[in-house]
Every structure is written in structure tokens, then in C-alpha cells.
Length: 266
Image (tube, rainbow, N blue to C red; front, side):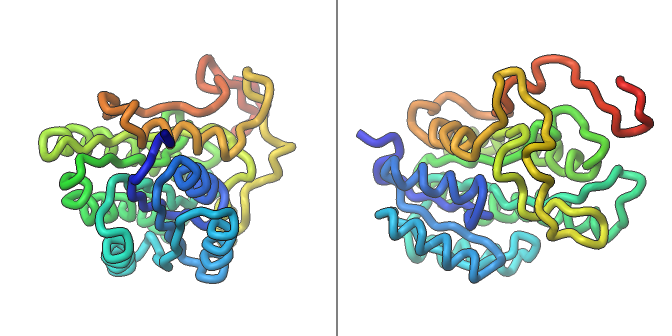
């Protein structure tokens, strides 16, 4: 039997990259899926791609930085699916700058999407997840486990998301048996769509050919994260909550070297 047979899932930021890969994987495993994103053209294309592959998936537009759009998208999701078993908080953005060089507007923009957006989605979805003993998966980052100075505020936001997941695991377990876990990908192709420098926030992440090679011997693929998400969403993970699971090919298994700050290897 498929891992997620009959489950109802909402995946934010599901129109490309990790979110779209998770939508394909969830549907393949028997789930009905709603994806959200702020770009309607991209979302409609993603929805068409999923349905062309025989997936039971629908797109609703929503900007994770806007609480009213979040609330509307959750209401649309519930009306369409009739309930909710899994929330995947995947929508995320970043800024390529150290913390001291990050303008306040970029700080606010990053925190509003990566932390406040996930918080509002969790609050809005919780009663419906509790009704079905469902679960939440928050897509954090290995940069939330160990700071990456060159993307300082992104690191801060993902560390906050991991802690939000932990607190939700405690509250959710006591109030309806709702599980909450964080997935922490390392460098994963195709990279983030919104990870530009100050003043150019929507520039995509750098080409994967520039990324360091993980100990496992290859750079991560979106499907690696998607398969981990399927497991955490499934009943096989019914006793797993409050976990921050690294999906990074071993990059955080030991000390890293960096020449970013002053050219000195540390």
C-alpha cells in the first residue's frame, strides 16, 4: 500500500524546487495535495505538471509573508480537501549577506516568510490536524543547525524555525497528538529561487557547480528531501516528533572550512 494513502496534505512554496518534488512524491504515495505559492503563473504551471503526471494536486495562490493570504489559502485548502493530515511549511527566502550587512527590510522580509509565515500556517492548520492526528513538517536548513555567516539572517530564520517546530511538537503532542518535525537540507539542487543579495532579493541561488562536495560524494537532489518528507509524514514515523533531521550528505558530520570572512581557512 502507498505510504500516504488517503492522506490530505498542504505544501507551501510548492510551485518549484523542493516543494514541487515533495508534491510529486506525496501524490505518488497516495496523498491528495494542495500547493501554494505567490507566483500564479508558476503555480498554475506546477499544477498542470502534477495533473499531467496523474497526480491529485491543486494550486492556490498565497504569499507566505501575508497573514490574510495564508488564512485564505488554508480555508480554500480545507474546502477543497475536506480536512488535513499534513502541513509542510516549505515556503522560504533568503538574502546573500552577512548579518551586519543585511538591511532591515531584508531582515523583515526573510523573517516574515520563513518564521512568521510558518507560525501562521501552523496556527491556522492546527485544529484540523488535531482532528485527524496529523503532523507538520517544517523545511529548515543545515544553516539553521550551524551558522553560515555569508547568509547570516537566513541562518537565524532557520534556527528559529527549528525551535518553532520543537515547541509545536510539545504543544501538539499534548493537544491532539499532532507531530512536528523539521527537515534540514544541505545544498540541494536546483537551489532556492529567492536567495539574492540586498537589493536583488529574487535572484536564484548560485549554480550548483560552485557548491562544496558533501562526504557522501554528490550534491543533494530535491528528491532526497522529498523522500525524507514522505517518511516523516507517514504512519511509520508515528513516534517521531521534535526532530531536526539533517538531509545533507554528511556535511554537518564534522568541522567545515570557510574562506568567506578574510581568506583565512578556519
